[in-house]
Length: 131
Image (cartoon, rainbow, N blue to C red; front, side, top):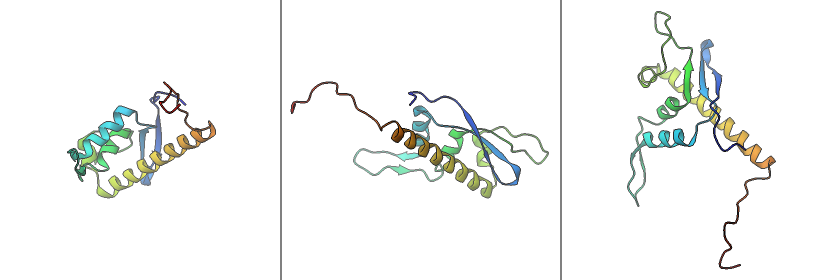
């Protein structure tokens, strides 16, 4: 398995002939950013508080690199946080479902590859006291 995420995009088809171009995988920094944007409060010893306004949105903002969406004049609309926030709710929900399905598919492929490669192995750095 590769140690670094290769920047690749895949196209996800939506209803009405629309599409999203999304990152095939998020890297570690992007995953931390998704989580960080969702967290409202994180106090040691207390339950993490999630910002409900950011759930779903942060994943879309991290994954989407392009789309076929246009304004009422047929002009292409660039991907931005403001554009995502201005989507029709049904389309927004469809996009979240498409990205979630894509992410689940990528996770399943990685899990299958790990199992085919014999799983993960750990390296013994120093012998334990019990040895």
